[in-house]
Image (cartoon, rainbow, N blue to C red):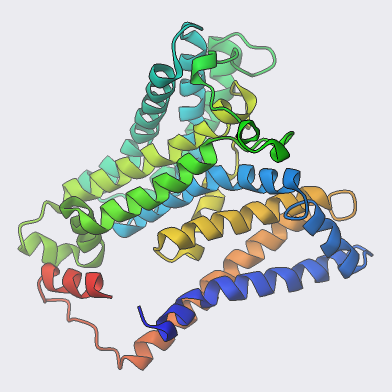
Length: 367
């Protein structure tokens, strides 16, 4: 990619950072705080101390998984806004299974087993909107919203009635299913909730994005998202690829349990990981289809979330939620503007709809 293209690609992220600082100053001023003082407090609570850095990494970890999940579905032209429900039910099932494992079971067996079960649960939740989209043409956004509502009702019922937990939490997980904290390797992070789920998430992002780019199945998922009708003409099983993309998306979203129940609490409680599914949409938008973009976007939003906690005594958390929402809108607008500028610069030289999917995909891969 040429330097000029790199700059254009980074424009939404640069605008988000600049806009975030400006909006933060305005919010602090609106609540009677000196912007410089609030910024200093936010920095000290995030990147200014080892503990703050650890908390930023902890906040970013589930967003890496949910952002990657949304990106996988987006490659196929789908919108998986059901990551919230997929992660919620997968966290419950994974934590219950982890709590039933023998305490003597080693990590090399227990941890992969729990993660696989959680991923299968997330894929099962994603199967509902996926199959309705493929077989009946029902838009996945509508069905995903309904599935999220169903999961929201199932979770407290399962905890209170099925598990009989008055505190709405599962039993503690087996030691072998727990991910160790990063402070075992980096003692300066002592006290933070950052665990080895963070490097696991980063590796997952780069590996999955590379597989989507290099493997035949990954390229076909992308081609289906670009030209579904042309793919059918080329003999590609469009419905199977759509179904596969959605199931993979649900499975990846569920892996965020590695950071919440397995790497942090050691059990699942109602509300643990809530909001990560929605924030993952912003991560994917900011990432713009690049692995490094997804990682940086997740860290950026993790920084915002931790900064909100750092200044909570002076600026309400709800104001920081407004800041994040405003940044999502800003990114969407700047991304759209950048795309229009790119199309104008190229003279709208896009392949016509009737061209074969393989030709369109070859041009996409060559960028």
